[in-house]
Image (cartoon, rainbow over all chains, first blue to last red; front, side):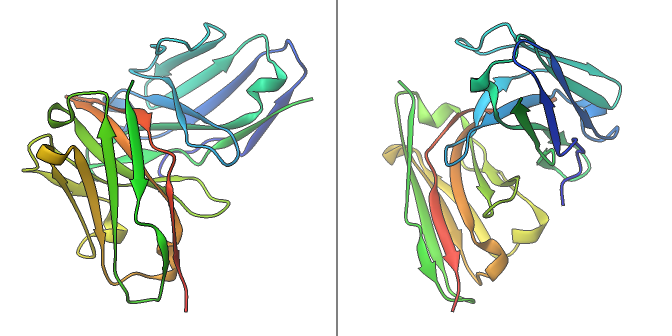
Length: 110
Length: 121
């Protein structure tokens, strides 16, 4: 059972913006850095955002991350059909002494 | 180029054992934490375990403690997951991932393609 809560799905038209929330507690998001992963069907996840708001090389600046208190947010601007995928947040949980992922959000481009 | 290649998956009966391997290349394996992450069919991601660069510390998700053992051989640039007393709910794709773990920081910057483990009679 995931300890980080995300909306199951989100959708928007091409060119629009979507924001995906990730809600946790003080033992995870509240005191540790958050990362985000993108996963297409049948493929391995890919790191999208790390340390709350940093992008690995090659990730376009249309993707952004932020954190406030015990919640984090992934933003995608200028939505493209290629952004249709599942998105997961994740962080270390100090109480569980383990990494925890969010429940995942499926993004659909209308 | 960082590469992680998993192997060892397959069909096993409930209560059986399986050993997964992950061959790493393109980076100094002995200096990085490594993790196993799994994904049951149609479900989300679940972190399974990680191991310190020198192999001296391991952490596990509660559901596999006492049944799974993560280990590594730095001389062979390889990561392993010994899975014992397997259950139907362990059925999943198992990914090997490079784990960037520091104080308050943890994320997975490279992933393998995954290997499928099916537990069924």
